[in-house]
Every structure is written in C-alpha cells, then in structure tokens.
Amino acid sequence: MTPAPPLRAVAAERGLHVGAMIGPGPLRTEPRHRRTLADEFAAVTPGSALKMGPLRPSRDTYDFGDADAVVDFGVAHDMYVRGHALVWHNQKPDWFQAWDYTDDQLRAFLRDHIHTVAGRYRATVDAWDVVNEAVADDGSLRETVWSDALVGDYVADAFRWADEVTDANLYYNDYGCEALTEKADAVYDLLADLLDRGVPVDGVGLQLHALGERPDPDSIRANVERFRDLGLDVQITEMDVAFSRDDVPDDPLAVQAGYYRAVAEVCPEAGCDALVVAGVSDANSWLRSFADFPDRYTGDPLLFDERYRPKPAYDAVVEALAED
Ligand code: XIL
Image (tube, rainbow, N blue to C red; front, side, top):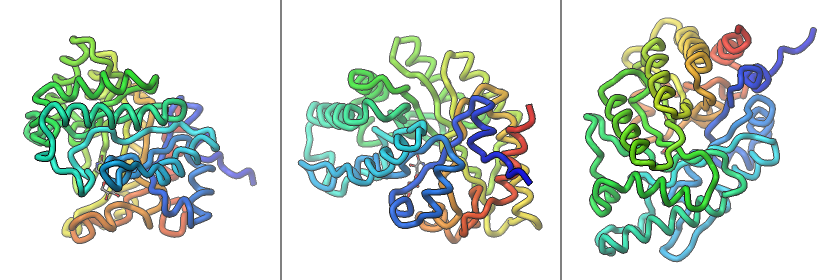
C-alpha cells in the first residue's frame, strides 16, 4: 500500500504553509517531535522563545539560544519561519518596569528591541508578528505599557521600526477577530487606517484558539475576504480546538475533526496562505500548563496525540486540503 502523502505535501499543492507553533524543549529532547515536525509541517513559529521576556534575561543581555534552536531547525528543513512577537503586553522581562523609563526612553527601548531582534533574523524569518493583541476585547486600543508611553501610535511606529531592518512580511496578530465580530471590526479599522497612512503592514494573523467556542466558518470566510480586499495577506496563526470541561460533546474527537476540516476548507478558499496550529502533539499543548486552562479546557486540542499518532483531526485536514 502506498502511504498517504503527509500533510505538508497536500498543503503545498494548495499553496498553503501548514505550520506548528513550538517550544524548544521537545525539539531538543523528543525525536518524535523533530520527526513529526519535519515530515508533516512546512512552517514553524517559536511559541515563546522570541518574546521579550524569554529573550532578555537581564537589562543588558539577550539570550538567543532557544529562539535560534527553533529558527535553525526551520531553516535546515526548508520551512517558512514565522517570528512571534516583537511587541506584546505579556511575557515581558521580570526586571522590566515601565516607571524606570521616561516616555522617550521607552520609545527608544522598544525601537532598539525591534531593531535588535528583527535585524538578527533578517535572513531567516519570513514573517513577523510585529504587534500582538493590541486591541482589547471591546474593540478599544488595549491599555498597555506601550500604549501608555507611546500614546496611540505605537502600533504604527512598531511596524515602521521593523520595516527598517527586515524584508520579512509584517503582521498584526490577534485573537477573537477570526470571524465577523465587533473586535474583528476594530482590527479591520485599525489596519485600514494604518494602510491609509502608508504604514508598512503586510498581513493579519488570526490566532483561532477555538476554546469552548468555535467561530463560524462562513463568518471566518467573509472576514478573511474583507481583509484580503484591503490588500492584506491573511494567516491562521495559532489554531487549536478544545472544549470547556463542563460542555464536552459525546464524541469530542469527531467534533474537533469536523471543525478542523471546515477551517481547512475555508482557509485556502478565502485566500489565507498559512494554517499554523498551536503545537505538534497534545503532550505539548499550552492548554495543559497555562494559568487555569487545565481546569477549564480539555487538553488535547491538536492534530497529533501524546504519542505523536495522527488523530481524526489530522485526517480531516489532509482530506479537506486534498479535495480541490
Ligand atoms: C502562549 C504560549 O504558548 C505559552 O507557552 C506561554 O506560557 C503563554 O503564551 N496568544 C499568543 C501566544 O499570541 O503567544 C500565546 O502563547 C497564546 C495566546
């Protein structure tokens, strides 16, 4: 029997970068992780290694070891590398306290950070999440240390600073804006305004953490299409599908597979060019360790189970992409 083509082969046929967001730990210690990533995926994103906190152990030092491990793996396996994330309000260094800086100093600090990190990976990172989650759930600009100090326009500044040092495609990335929600309207308005002003934004990343709720695929299609009509590239950047522990369907693996199938159909049809999942194996899902998520959500949201066996969701994605 001829083995079925792996996910990366069927995705490539559809012009889709199929990827996984990963940490450096299992990449170093788990051969099955390396093998599955290399055989099945054509894109990789460091889950946390490129965030400011993990990268900057002290005020004057950077530690690029973990980030390099993931990026180098991607380059060695001819993968599309998504960098994540230059500006975010979470996972900042513990030593970093905004009140140690004047507003001008904070601006210089963020500019230097972007120049250092995006500049280092100029030749290896294909797309950057330049700004992550700048819009609050009610659609207003999220109040963060960056918005406080740099006033409203820090998003524009971040894109301009990244553009000074890299040719990578520059993305705005967020959650809750996959379908036609109020937050998606706000993200749309933000990006339309940036484009109007000539700010170098190339694309929008839709995280798609389907935790308990699964955004309607037809609504995702319409939303992706309107971002495409603005001239933006669109990527699904952190997809996982889990259930609230108090509302698990009778056949969770089948429901999960059905949703992955629907998204895998809509994504290339609507013009998305990447579908990145939030990990390779359920064993490494962030839902198993992050905050109170282990209590709230089922912990098996990905395409491969703990033993790296493909799940029904994997078959569903392969089938959906194989059908033209
Ligand atoms: C998560 C990582 O996967 C975890 O390992 C970390 O503890 C917290 O952050 N949105 C994002 C990602 O943009 O960076 C987050 O990743 C998940 C939510």
